[in-house]
Figure 1 (tube, rainbow, N blue to C red):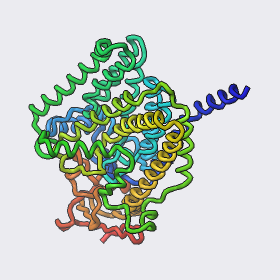
Figure 2: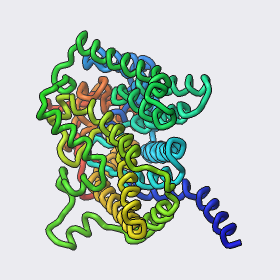
Figure 3: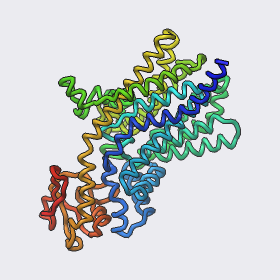
Figure 4: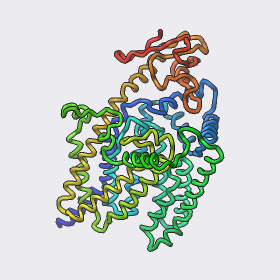
Length: 491
């Protein structure tokens, strides 16, 4: 009778666990809701007003952007162009946009959990999903949790859905898997080599490498085709500067190491590349990383439950190998670009680090499995406490990052309010406007990506047709922001 009751409790817990993971993951990344339009988003924020000002269609600017990236930087990603411009044309409210990023992130985590359950076991899947949530770091850098239109999440979702379909039998499911792989590949180059991942996963479900190779052949062919296309484009339209390729061994290996390391727990905090985490005293440390004991406990309890339900047959080796493959396949395309060889440093990882979190989680779960095999009684307790501490520290560092970025969000909200209340009322059509306050979203015309200008903001919120220029060219109107009272004034 006692065993029946325990089985029922375990079954109920299994059904509830995805909701627990989603709730805990939300708590870790929820600080992002307090941020404004950040990084590249600070330019694309002006898109709806820019299109209305120029009477330009969304399709026209998509075509323009596609041509710019193809012929200027040898980058072929029509999926990204469509997704990016659709998102910024649709999600014009910053809070709605931030919710979009959070929802897409949690959907990706749940699909990852289901994917691991199919290829490994439910116990491993639950723990892996929980570990992903514990290491979802927000950075004051290029960050998928704070900006970048949800593209890394969309690509992860497409790949995970493809892998789920790939695990099934039947021609129809394999066709769906292949179509989704094409969608992911045409959206972001970092997944070009993922044919190798399909091969490795096929091997976990087939009796030999020969059978696995036959199953994964279409995906390997797709990878070969996409990589050949990338090489051909670089030969036909060789990019100069940031997006040029460099195979110099030392810069490449250093960039690869930095990109890989960024996916692992608390590296951003430990390296502190942005200099925002104080360590001069315990009080300084606490103020700059305010750890929540309740979050430690919540993650630790969930991790302990997940660790108890690990399948005894689960093997650490294959899990670690798949995780390492995911991390390396995503890091390599970043490391070969000149831009990131100069830009990355320990603690900073470019956008593919979002996908690397899933690979890192598999590696960390493999460590838990290996430790449990050697220390069956102690390892689950130590592992649960470690996951709880990591999760709480990650959330604390996210709070600190958001605190650093929050002044920009305040300035943006104040700018919208000021425009709506007459900041540029009465300004002549095509007057030149500049700001004495250094704001990336108010840079002069012609400096934004795809030609998008902050003039779109003036049109969207004040219906004013102006030209945004540098303050050094004696503009007709000069704006100034005072952070002390969060107010914009016209001088």
